[in-house]
Image 1 (tube, rainbow, N blue to C red):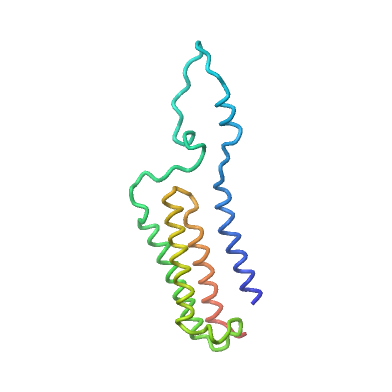
Image 2: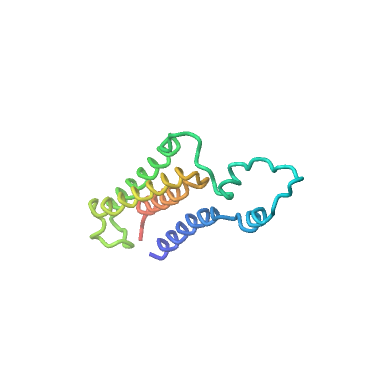
Length: 157
């Protein structure tokens, strides 16, 4: 059980670290440029770039489709790993880390698939907003499900 808790903590850490790196870092540079009063004899500054207009935040992607092939691949890998996790847990005879009542397919699919849908929606929203690390929550949950399915398949608890 401690291995599972450690794996979940690493997943949370892996998801939160890239998202915290997306914070606004426009701080004093924007304040200094706003406080300067242009002189009549000074030349006009160049037009701001899109990154300067948004204060350094990422701009949304130029294309109109968010749910492209990359998103479909990441999402399908997430659901495939979740199904593999559920099926290997169902077939595991000597898995004592999880109570026998939770070895049923209805329980594992009833918990796993709504979580997958929520993570897929989160990755969709992150990609729509233009974040570079939009795929990290789905990949982290995919890795956790793959690890657990391997653990259940080779379990000799």
